[in-house]
Amino acid sequence: MPAPHLALPPTDRVLSPLTGWTRAHWEALADRQLEALVPYATPGFAQYRLPGRNSWSGVVSDGLEGFARSFLLAAFRIAGAGGEVDPRLVERYARGLTTGTDRNSGEAWPELTDCSQQMVEAASVAIGLHETRTWIWDKLDARVQERIVDWFSGFVGGKTWDNNWRLFQVVSEQFLASVGAPYSQADVDGGLDRIEDWYRGDGWYSDGDGRNFDYYIGWAMHLYPLLWARMTGGNDGGRATVYRERLGQFLRTYPHFFGGDGAPVHQGRSLTYRFAAAAPVWMGALAECTPLAPGLTRRLASGTARHFVERGVPDERGLLPLGWYGTFLPATQAYSGPASPYWASKGFLGLLLPADHPVWTEREVPLPVEESDQYTALPQPGWLLHGTRHDGIVRLINHGSDHNPLEGPAQDDPHYAKFAYSTATAPETAPRAWGRAVDGHLALLTPDGTPSRRLRIHPLSCAGRVAASRHDARYPGADETYPIETTSALHGPWEIRVHRVTAPQGATVREGGHAVADDAQPHTECGPGWALARTTTGLTSAVVALHGWDEEAGTAREVASNAYGPHSATPFLTATSHPGGDSVHVTLITLSQDTVDPSALRESITCAVDGDTVRVRFPDGTELTL
Image (cartoon, rainbow, N blue to C red):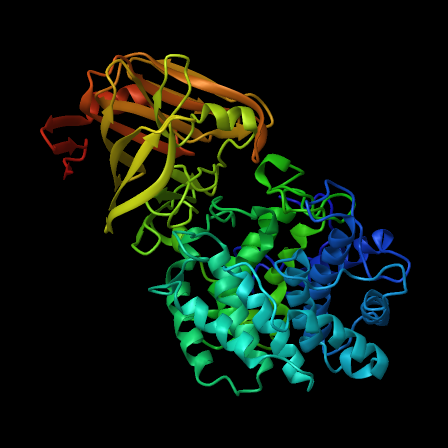
């Protein structure tokens, strides 16, 4: 696919047979984004006030965000080129630092106060200053340096949110230490000690207390400790060795999150950061702790960047819109302002690696899903990753991440509460669609059709090709809960999903498959015990009743509810008039670029339920006992 809004160098199919991309493509993409920001700069370049919906922090904070996050990209570009860049780039950010810390400039940055958005942005400024020290910091007037130090000093003794934000304080105060300014070693040690409480093993952190697993693990929890280590000059007390070992463990399975088309699995918050999903693989190479071949590191990162570029990101203005491809606000969070997507800058960390580094000079090698079908169990987050080579799709089966606190009220979120996510689909996130909660969900329905919610997820097991969890279904506004225990098993391109449902007498049970989306309305079709939805590209989502469902199935259509396209549809099954007590429901879930014949699947797959035991036999003779 061509890049609709970006002029790129010629592809190199010898060095990069899978993506065609080289370091020159990354530099061109960085340069285009940085140049496109200039018309939106304030006169002194201290803020970039971009078009789009403002965040809850206000226009001045959003303007700082535009400076800080793009400065991160500029820093990687400047340092990676040894300063051999357009001198106007260096001048713009040096001037912005001068103006932003001048309280009388009319463009001054907000002061750093407890738990303020400025803390997030300060960390990017600190990293940018450290990496460009030779070309920017060392050449700033001493009075400007003093003002920058004074601004950063708001961190000392300050309070942050108790999650990845602790690391913003760590890197910012370490920058102060690196330039001989006052700082608090207790703040630095306290933040680094705190993340130890969230380390779960096998390279996995939770982002704070609870079961908070998403891309923040890679682009925050692993990234900042090793960026901090770069600031210490080797005086890290042995911590960096531990962080490198953990990142190495994490990266062993990280490539399994990426589809053959380069798309990352669409799960979790802040997905508008897009390219940032590549940050941990670059960090692994930079910190010399990666288990990945250099050609795999570049193939993953370049494939992800190319995926978005070919789908119009950046847009015709050269900007990164709030969304996944184009602007799509239902997939964003209230803290996201028009410059928030520029945390994508983290995905350009590889530019710090010299041009003769093996990640730039060795031949690309395939992603795991390009070599064979993949089944990957991740016990810490409670996920199964399921990749199929023939269509390059990776699916994430979720039995562990709910993004809820350990105690207190729990909420559901479409980016965490679904049973399944993938590289080819997104959850329905517009308020209307989220209220219906059809896709990726097992719901009990009230008489008026209101669905129960999947709130706190309790993992039960995750190994091989099988994972299980329990959640307590609750109707909105009600106190009573109904336990639902679910086991997922993978076979070939299919997921078998078994639910033991406790429900009140007369309730309706509903199960939805993946939502597929496109520019045109997906084709939908239903038959006895099955339903499907198919896009014009052939992407098909289907659900097939194997046990416990009514013969009548259905599909739910939505408009402007899905990050993958304006028209979306979800197939679903129902079971009416629950007898009360426990019931068992068995479903085959499929998402494929192949032709799917649900009627043939239903006829050829047998399912027997005997008490707590479910036996499924497939056409190839394989039997599963669940």
